[in-house]
Image (cartoon, rainbow, N blue to C red):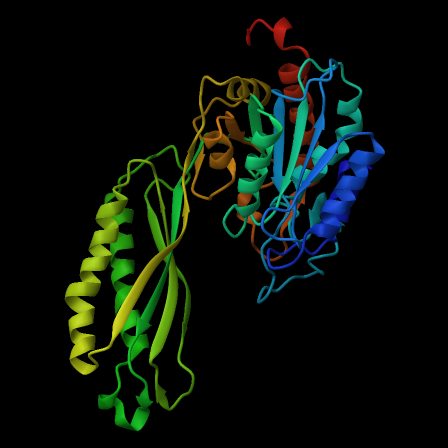
Length: 394
């Protein structure tokens, strides 16, 4: 199948992170087996989800070293979004393919799969590895098991491309991201007896407003890194839940906020500011009304940022093939840091515009698919076939 056919099939699998991805993994597994390529299905901690690792060995049978191409199989939900078409039925119109995951990041996976027969015919000096992971959208969970499994197998790629949507521009950095869950525990009461209650929503609102004040200060004062698409740190409250009835003072309110920050950001200072506001401003007032009132703040996700190694072979090759030398960094998170932490030099480069990701009517252009095909062909040729014959890379 070609890239467009693969993309349409992949979009048809509803792989929202809360769902299984096993049907998609089975289709990919069948494709590699059809071409006589060995695969490893890696479940990690969940039988309903799996990573898949496949390798086209070097001509001497070697499986270690070489190039890793990686993409995640899960997509974000569509609930509450207004789509013009069925998000899980690919729709081609005016040079674009629409559907959930079309951009983030089934387009790159489709290109990977479509090029397998072509790559299989190459006279490889180094192997090509293909990784398909699960639950990237909820914390890069699958990739951790994949990296561990590669280490167990003794597979140590010398370079990796994570194909998140970058409009085929090489991305050399991403911000770190922490996610916090905050629970405000007040006291429920009938709303006609308001003074007997401790309104958890009101105190949550106070803390959310304080977080917004800190976010504005960071936006205005930095620290700044102008290589990023958004140069300052950001902090946003993204989920709030509280209250059970219109005539009950809410006893509990919960919210989730995130922080995205560049490497030089003093994270501990920010966390201390928030905790001090809780301890010195909110809790004394709450506990004067209800001695058992409490505020619980917990970091539930800590994704470290990523900075590419400029002198690594994969960075130099991708820069040469794309012709882009700019130092481009992004504010969103990917699996790139996990691979690089495993001593695999990594760069982010894939088809589609990140502005389309997670939105209704998500799409990727057919021109981006074609560009990705050409870039991967050239990168694979230079990295795995002609390396020793290219003076720029020796």
